[in-house]
Length: 233
Ligand code: TMP
Ligand code: ASP
Image 1 (cartoon, helix red, strand yellow):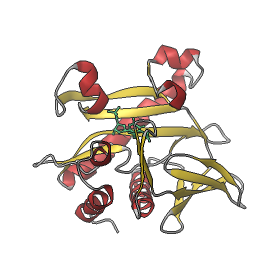
Image 2 (spheres, protein in one colour):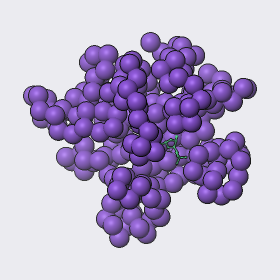
Image 3 (tube, rainbow, N blue to C red):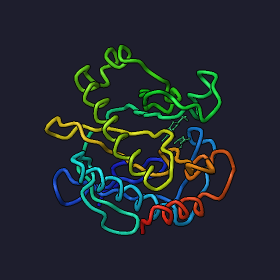
């Protein structure tokens, strides 16, 4: 089947079924807009596993996504959507670019979860946008943006509780949403340690892509340890 799109971490193919696509999770790891990169055997399998698991868990809580089913170690079927070019970041604890922007130490606990919206545009370096920018760029209507923010916070509630039960702090994560042929807004892309910050609740050990970004530990072993901790296989 025809490959429709290749991103940094996934390939997207058409299928024989209308409005159904096949996604293949790749073994490539990138950071800093592709400046740092590596091929890591087994990464595709692990992220397909995590993403399938979290999308299934969210569906059980009535939060639908593009995910239909996992069809192999590295592949899943998804509903075709047009991706809204926004990176929707939910943060419970300041880390990464937020810690830098507001001059706080990583680990600064915020009194409520906050949402940041970034323009999904590699050439511009994914700049942060406010609601007015999004409206004038026509990336989403104000009503669509409201729906996206509500869904993002619902997803945070579900994921945060799940991780808490496994002794992990959900520091922050990035979501992407898409629109179906009928105009319905669906959670899309992936949910994996590539797109979340996850710290052990006691030791604060990192179980996410920061180990690769910052050369802290080997990525595959870290993601495998996370899968073991969560009992996902
Ligand atoms: P940041 O602190 O670097 O802005 O990242 C916030 C969260 O978003 C963090 O969980 C990592 C995730 N993220 C992605 O999934 N993709 C990206 O391209 C970037 C920059 C961050
Ligand atoms: N996903 C981005 C990249 O591949 C940045 C990141 O996750 O740090 O470059």
